[in-house]
Length: 361
Image (cartoon, rainbow, N blue to C red; front, side, top):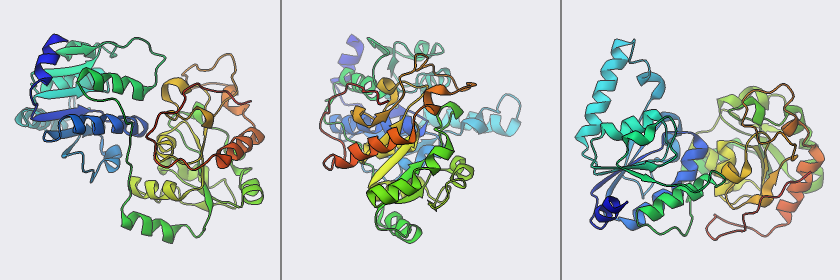
């Protein structure tokens, strides 16, 4: 680490963050970006990101540049001549930018390779990075335990770079046009947002359970129901009768605007769930096969609902029973919603909140 300490005593001119995906991971990295900008306010900071997640970063004042990395397209380079040409151009462009500090927060073989391809004199990642990606780094930051939230790992990286580690702020923001679009799309004054999709089938609370929330949300809390999400939520949303269906109809900026207006959000472990947590919305986060200590809503343990079955967390994307998530009752989710609505308004997350994870039966 001595080489890093010597380097950061100077002023890196051009910095690259490598964190292409997923939506939740990109959301988790936003506090790190803000702390990095505070450390080096005059540096040119770029972020390598997938096109699907770029909308969350566009227009940010603390970021100078986005580099789009289309993994599906460039991954065809070994057999597709056009993709091979695109990959060659990508490599040449990365070198041309002359980064002097590259930070790989993805920790996979391809992200380590991309860091190496920049030719930056300092390439930093975590010592426990997967797929031997650490071989491409000049500096490895040690991690004491895996039982640590992703954001806390990124704060460890920030500390290694000489940055402050507080405050933790996300500053997700939607434009006036995004808010105007949501006002036209959602004809309700007070509403809850349901987010029934998730990348893994095992993370999905049964859609029939989401459908059973519509009536009690209106009767108990006076809230209309809006079902939202990306294209993967369209078919699911069609099963939630009596709700306003906006699934597949919003950009990431418009989704931020929708979540900002929501009085309650109920979601699976997903990227939009982390966006709602970052916005400080009253939140019920449904967890099954994944570990809320590592990837739950940050500093929001009170919002997590889970069963506590012996096999969870298992991190399986396929399961015959999905007992850990299917056994969560509608009543448990509504009780958690009541607790969230009884809490004082949070606003955007900044101050530390106790982190113990509580299981709700």
